[in-house]
Length: 338
Ligand SMILES: *Cc1c(COP(=O)(O)O)cnc(C)c1O
Image 1 (cartoon, rainbow, N blue to C red):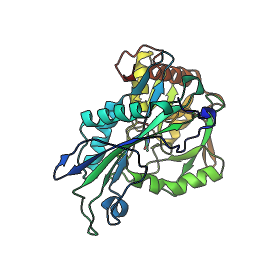
Image 2: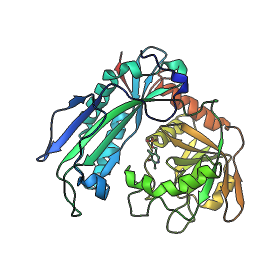
Image 3: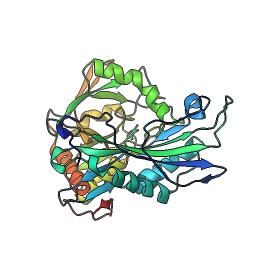
């Protein structure tokens, strides 16, 4: 293992030794290349730079207490990237190629996988982008798919805890029939202004209502929302929410734990009735919400300064599965290094 101060890691970028790349040309994917260069040689007229033909994924490799290294639901990331590719007219990366490249990049950089005790992980960032030169608006014919790895610190430095969020009404991250359900960089560009404002005001993140009516809950910044009441896990349904793999897994775990699960529109008014609420995604698993402020109406939705019992249970169960300490009865994890 590399001599790295694992405790000091944040969600930033630290160089690892290798990335893996595969090019799509003449209607087919080529051979996987192992690369030690961190830079790309990209044409200045490439479609990804001008017209946003760029998509990404995010998943982690976990060094587990049993000494094995596991990745979590990589096939789901492959499927989501395929859906995103269709959404912005790029070729789909086959699941087998995606998973092979995930395994390869983890094994090649295994000295950078943080020790279990540090709480840090090896974050994998798959990227798919159009590389054909051209100034006309049309999909590229050539594409690059690459995966790089970088160690990242634990989301909760001081332990699992709750944070405040703020409703924004003057920025939309995605339109109802736009690209909100696809993991494309453009959605993040659209959200940066709201994200900056939320951080400047001391919030963990911005919180979006639906773009059309500003009446229903959409997303918590770059994470999905869930609320809990009467032993029921409720998560919003909308056409502009990114389908989170963490949320999908939490819905299954909630059901396994005997909760009811509902995926349906959630009106802002209903927020008052939740006993617990949280944001969920790969980075944090669950980031419980202490309170949610609506600065326009002055309304404050309180969910408690400490994580609630269901949030804790869901968090611990999903983390346990990822780290191989709780039985993986749905076959979600893949052992990459024995
Ligand atoms: C990636 C992402 C999520 C979380 O998805 P996971 O698969 O759980 O990591 C949620 N919302 C947005 C907008 C995202 O880009």
